[in-house]
Image 1 (cartoon, rainbow, N blue to C red):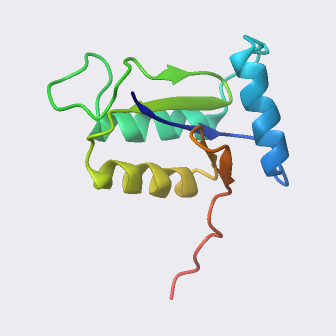
Image 2: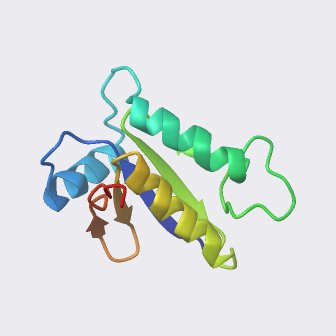
Length: 119
């Protein structure tokens, strides 16, 4: 069984309920035709640069490859034995790209952390 997360590029001000509604639409096969959100593209490129999904390589953290990438989200099905660093990298990259993180296990939604100002 995998540990499933997804990252979502929704409009500024989107709520956890908006994310859950988008997840439900995806699960129902409703994917609107639109250009990929640049935040999603950048996240996908960054995460797969560290953890390739095409082709899957030995030791990959992914339980399902290739990753499901749509215009507004990327689904990440993680092997339960993957290193904690993979989760930390997903969280960090989601924040860097202003993506909301959805935890499919319990339905939790985590907004991106506030941008940090240089100190």
